[in-house]
Length: 370
Image: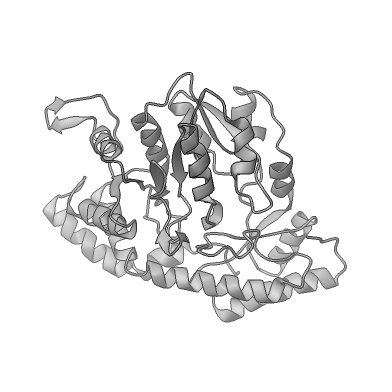
């Protein structure tokens, strides 16, 4: 089976190094917010052009604390998209604000055109999502939002390695949220996340609140939460950072092969349209006969995935608490998109098999169209 992700293989490759590092941690007892966490935060800061990096226990908490740091809560509105993991909207709801969902373009990303009509006097923030590692036109969004006094929180959960003008995304808005979930290109062996910001006040707030607002072991200066990255996860991430650029390079090579060999098929190439700086967390094509294509590929022992089959505004959590809305492009894409395998454990012959199977499917006369 050609797998759609390489979570197990990635961990197994580096297990000897991880066990050695963890053994040292077990002997030293430095389990929470220790030197390994500081080392990872330093690496992340350097990756993000010197911005503050605060390690947390999830990307969700990074979004939540960014909203809290900006004073966003009940009575406020935050605009984002519906074709993302539910955590993006969940963080808004957890902060007490009202989520407002914008439709997306054919590249699955929100833009000034889709979010501007939704801006109101109650809008306090916009959360653009770098879905699948694709660059968003963040500068245009920033220009619009800053002209209206609206904050921008970049959802970079899938965007480690995504660049704009050669720089890691996540430092142009007021704050950004990265996820280090095991499924991510740079993932731990459990949950993890990072809040990145160039704003010292936001950084100081997040650093304090992630640890109950403690000034020392016995004194709290403000009420906070428990969102500490543990040293065992940080140690695993510190090992993986050595290989990240190599892994990203392989993803780009695979994506380029797909682009070249699928461009003349009805299934077509990645919905990101070959955006410069794409980290290819997902390589997604579309087909009006998506479900049959997925079954056919499975019969050829090629695993694919659908991210995300049910847009947030069609899920029970939304329908039971928010007004019903229609997002035509989001809904159409949710029926057509399919994620192909694209990770560094794939061989050249693996990706050739994927392309060959897609072309065989189309030769069988299936109803497939761009």
